[in-house]
Length: 170
Image (cartoon, rainbow, N blue to C red; front, side, top):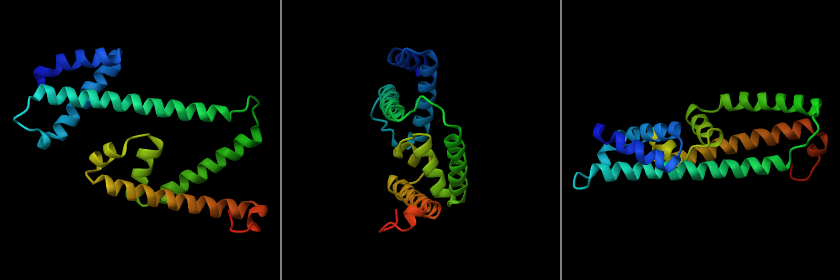
């Protein structure tokens, strides 16, 4: 594996055209290869296996960046040019309440929620990191989102008198 590092870095540099990103890709490739060594088939070539890991990591990062860019563009559509201090203060208070609530979630659910919803990690990466099946990650995320949604609905209903009398709640 060590002998492959220069070739892996060269390949990563050609893909990313960024030395820092290339170094990160090589490091992550080596970590992933070591972690997944039990999946390596000795009948195949180690270099081909590692190049495939690196390429998949690069393609995943492109996809993740495209999704983040798309979400950012959507958020910018709602951006107002004028700054509303009262609104910013209310948002800051709401954010602190949400953070406090997330801190009260079960550790497993909170961990998955933060890694996927905040860090933007893939289900597969989180499952591998935690050493659990993807289905477990999915169910933990669903439970965390459901609890957060219920808390937000209860919180909003309690704060807004118009919502208290609305049919069906929120």
